[in-house]
Amino acid sequence: MRNAIRILLGGKPEIELVAEAENFAQSLSLTRKFKPQVIILDLHMPDSEHLTPMNVSEGLRAYEAAVLAISVWHDEDTRALAQSYGATALLDKLLLSKELIPAVMKLGSGSHAEREAQSRSLFN
Image (tube, rainbow, N blue to C red; front, top):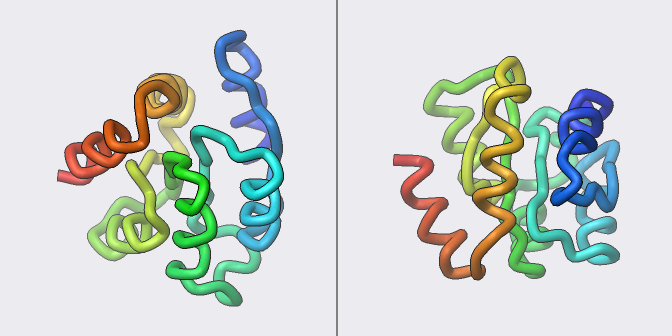
């Protein structure tokens, strides 16, 4: 999945991929180090059972990054899980080639307050 995301983002010179994480713990560490504007978070990374959504959400949001969650599931439970991680939107892994770039571009611009407002509209 990370390879596919890297290829998709690599085709857009206005988007800089600053890091890739193998799990939630590493995503928190890399967020502290690089302070990205947008984080693409796979809801089903290997260590998801070891960190609570609250721990991850607080760690990622401390740097005011917009979080895009990705999953193959889009039921109410998955949407609620994405929101508990502080996600601004939930994207379908199977549709990333169509949805990822527009979502990153939209959330990568604007202030933190604007991204918060977009978050409310993307989940409604």
